[in-house]
Structure formats: structure tokens, C-alpha cells
Length: 368
Ligand code: ADP
Image 1 (cartoon, rainbow, N blue to C red):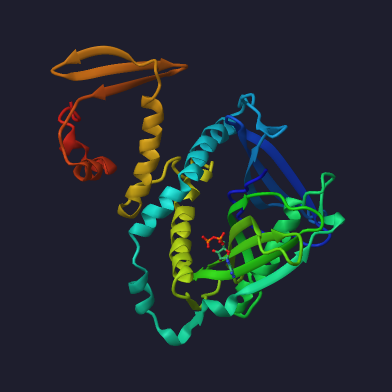
Image 2 (cartoon, protein in one colour; image 1 turned 45 degrees about the vertical axis):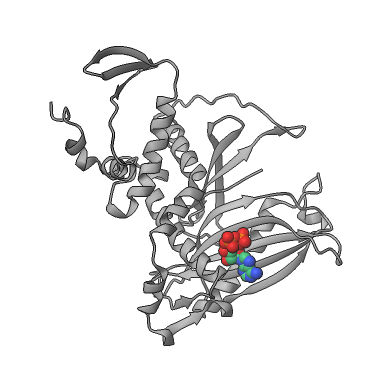
């Protein structure tokens, strides 16, 4: 089972050029593992080489329907060590994705956003809706009769590209695929219904959502939801720079919900750029704090702290005036944990803790 969680396309390649694909397990967790894939291209005449795209896929290992406990990988080079630790950060963000979206939605006002725009240059989202049906034939499937994931992705990209071109009336370029979930298999003989619509258009990019359902018999009313993905497109001008796109007017109900969710996904994607990037010299490993991401960041920090605190080998080293100091020694790391009970409103505590600049307000001992 694969879940590519990120797929930013950097530069395309053309007929006659060589494609080099490298894949490696970055980290094994319990039964899931993160695989990093890098696609590079090479022009044999000019000997130029360039990166085409990168993807991160999560695989889950199963043997006879039960999950397999994986052996841990040992990173050796500096690059492998960074990937190994960043993979855990990415996994945490993926597992928290639904909560993060919920938090971001609670803080975003769609109405102001839409009302402040000029209606005459808005495209109704309905105009971009696309639906198509594909019959899974033997060449589309592997030896077990299951449809190749890549084939489904190609069909999904087709419908998404048509939806995107209905907004921009030009040839759009795929930039990234988000949260591509393989929810269940489909087999030879299944019909796949692919549905796409532009969820939101930003200044220079748009998000198209695609959903895939499978059914076997024409008369069958039950459709299995097998895939969903969110694709980001841009329209490049003659100067290779992204062109400004028209705004979209979502349908009330599901359309407005998807419009807001697309904005939240864009925000996460931008914040995540810091984390998925391993160029530590250029970017910090964690997301810099700013008022718009405090809720989301706090989740990340709190979940790391919860994991650390939950370890059972903390040792109480000292206790003075009801302040307890615990230590934990693991590998090369020594962690400290100070514990003191306070009685304060949770909202107040959350606000204080989510901004480290306010630490002197709650930690009397901070400066000393
Ligand atoms: P959600 O509706 O929560 O976004 P779904 O998995 O149902 O999640 O759908 C994924 C995406 O597929 C949607 O965001 C939307 O862009 C697109 N989609 C879903 N249903 C339709 C439909 N009936 N017609 C066109 N596009 C659709």
C-alpha cells in the first residue's frame, strides 16, 4: 500500500532525454516505512543533469493480512541521518493532518475572502467539474490482478488537468500532489469513476481535487471509494513564470468546505516546506513560529513532548520547594524534565506555552 505524501515537480524532461530514478527507505517505523524517491533527468548531448521531482511514499508491510513488524534501518551518512530524523517529523505531521486542518479551518473566514472580490472575474467552480469512467483491463493490472497505482495516478492526473484547464483556459502544469491515499484495491473488470473539480484558486496556483470510486456490475449501486488526491497546478507563461489565475466561486455546501480546506492545505504545504527540506544550511529543521501557525505548531511540539514524557525511564534527581527535576539518559542524549503544579485556566496556559518569546512570563527561573 502506498501513500505518496508529496510530489513537487521541479522541471520536466522531454523525449530523447534519460531519466534516472533512485528510491531508498528513509526510515522504518512499526509496520510502515517512508520511502524517498528522486527523479533526475540527463541530456545526453549536452551532459546537463537536473532534478525533475521528488516524492515521499509510505508503504505498509502485510503478510497474510496481518501487519509485519519491520526491522529498523541504520542511517550511516550525514544525509541519511538527517532523512532518518526528518522522516519521523514528517510522519508526525501526516498523522496529525486531520487535526491540523480542523484547527486551521476554525480560524479562517471564507465569507470575507469571497465578498471582497470582484464577482465579474470569478469562475464558478461548477464550470470546472469533470467526470470520466475507465474500465480496468489486464494491461492496467499487476500479476495479482490489482490495478497499478501508477495507472490510477495517470487517470487521475488526466481528469485533474482537464478541470484545471477549464479554469485557466490554457495548458496547466502539475506542480505537486498532496495526500494521495490508496484506500483500497481495484481489480481487472472494475469500472473506475473519476471525478475532479477545482477546489480553490490562489494568485498563481490552483488546487484540483480528484476522487475515484470503483464498481463491478453496471447495476451495482454501491461504489467503493478507492482514492482521493489534491493536485496543485500552475500556468506558466512564455517567460516560464506562473501566470495570475482567475478567482473561483465555490458552490455553497461541500464546495465552500473544500474551498476552505484547500486554503488550509496550502498553508500546511508552505509550512511543511521547512520540514521536508533537508537543506539544513538553508532552512531550519523546525517551522519558524509566527502568529498564524501557533496552533498548528503547538500540536507538533506537544506531541513530541508527550512522546518524551511517556518514557518510563525518567529518574527523579532532586526536589526543592515542590519543583521536581527528572533526568533521562538515552544514547548520547540527556534530557531534563522539570515538574511543578500550577492552577491556571487552560486557554491561558496554552497561549503562554505556544509562544516561546513569552517564556519569561511563566518561567521565573528562565534567566538564571
Ligand atoms: P472531500 O470532499 O472531503 O475533499 P473526497 O475524497 O470526497 O474528499 O473528494 C476529494 C476531492 O475530489 C474533492 O475535494 C473534490 O475536489 C473532488 N470531488 C469529489 N466529489 C466530486 C464530484 N462529485 N464531482 C467533482 N469532483 C469531486
